Image (tube, rainbow, N blue to C red; front, side, top):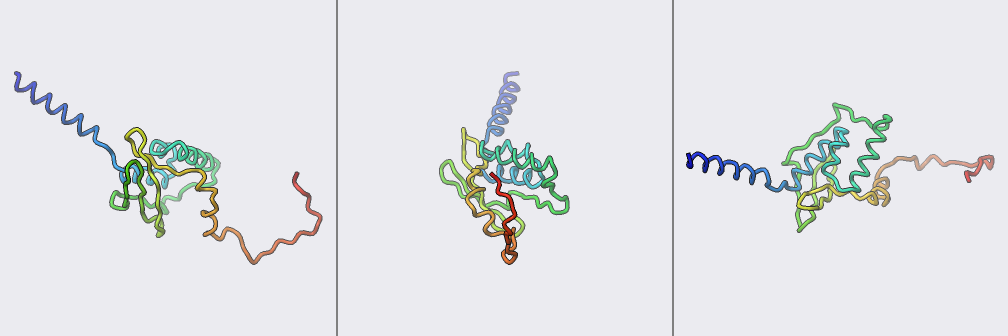
Amino acid sequence: MKKHFLIVALILVSTFLACKREVGPEVVMKKFANHFVAGEYTEAMQYGTPSTVQLLEMMEALASVGFYLPEEDELEFYSLKDFDCQVTDNTAVCYYLEYGDMVDVRLIKIDGKWLVDIPLDDLYDGQWYEEEDWYDDEEDIEFTGTERELG
């Protein structure tokens, strides 16, 4: 009887230790990216820092009014082999290809858990729209003087 108890105890302890094993930044990045691409922002929030959660809440609000809804045939899902993460202490930078472009995402370790960190300042630093032609340079806008100023 003692032998059976020892075997069961050993199995329980090894199972507990296996479940407690740290999840690396590649696994977190894969889960976050796949939820994000699918428009599953609520699910992606569990893998983000507070600033990333704010971004996801904004994305979710825009999606709820139809601003952005991913097309099923355009979705590109990721596997662990798609990410190359460089870890330094409690930070990591993961690199991967997204629709043909190399993307890097920062992760930080908080309370032993890796989280995707996308500061909101990154969206407003001007880099995200400089590369995009979201306006037509050749189309000059002329003012006739009859426009009203917004106050």
